[in-house]
Length: 77
Image 1 (spheres, rainbow, N blue to C red):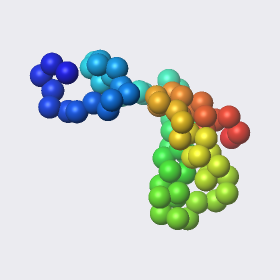
Image 2: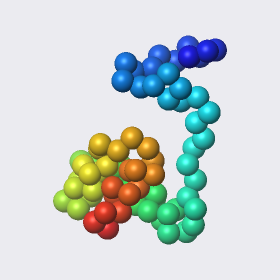
Image 3: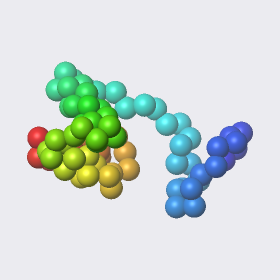
């Protein structure tokens, strides 16, 4: 990447991170979902997650973007 010292993974396109803007919730419901996702991921990392939290975080594992992760998390919540 031009002007970047960051190494890209072999499976990423050349411009994978160029122009990236952090996603922001569109409304209060999305903001609440993002907080719930963060709580679930934290609980999994700390080993205190409920079965539902572990399942939800597992569904998010294959998602590439934040929006895809939110949709995967929302699927059953």
